Length: 311
Image 1 (cartoon, rainbow, N blue to C red):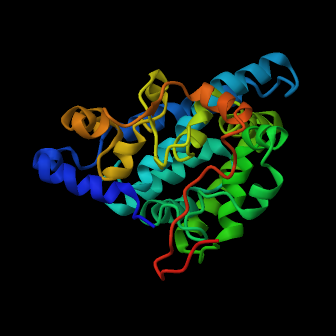
Image 2 (image 1 turned 60 degrees about the vertical axis):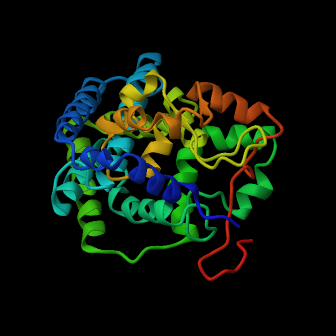
């Protein structure tokens, strides 16, 4: 029955700390981090071109290095979606398509629309595609179901938006698709299928039982009977995740880039230090699976803009 909390807190912070606007704007460092991680992943893919995908060295590299790197690229695209890498829209979209290359599946253009709706209509069923579907609620609300969800959550986040709310294709969707297909073809042609499998395996691990992947569950699931809809995390994994753990801060001020989110928290401690936060992303996954009080259903839904109750 209440509005999502971020708009009201943003207004309160801007009233108490009008200097917060100085933190807004793009971050030039982002493009260099993206370039480094893309280069790292392509180098690893080339180095493993003659290593069988079932070789322990291949699997360990895909999980530890590739999973962390591609998870970083997921969050680079998240950052770029808010136009925080360049002052113009087109350069941001092109950088997102470039960051998409080691992920193997074109999604950066589609992600932008879905993610902006997640910010504008958080918790509205049928609009916010971050909410689980009724199928997920009915079939995965048990320990085995939660293990399956946590293991394959990257597939849920990839497929759910198109099922719940399809988008109208634009020229950017086409550019994203054609660029990715051309890149995949050249990679396989020059280095073979093992290199392609490495990148796809990296993407799978990045959204599976990986320490960094805990943020997918940590951000908006309800915990311990609290009605707090967004949780932050301030631990060391933020160093490889564009500070996405500062998630209350990000939702309050989506126009503040990742490098300045800690400064936002320091500027307004009276608003953030009192909010419960997760101490560990890996333990979020463990607790999500084992805690009977937390499940797929543990999300907040609210009335739609038309005033009709979300089912």
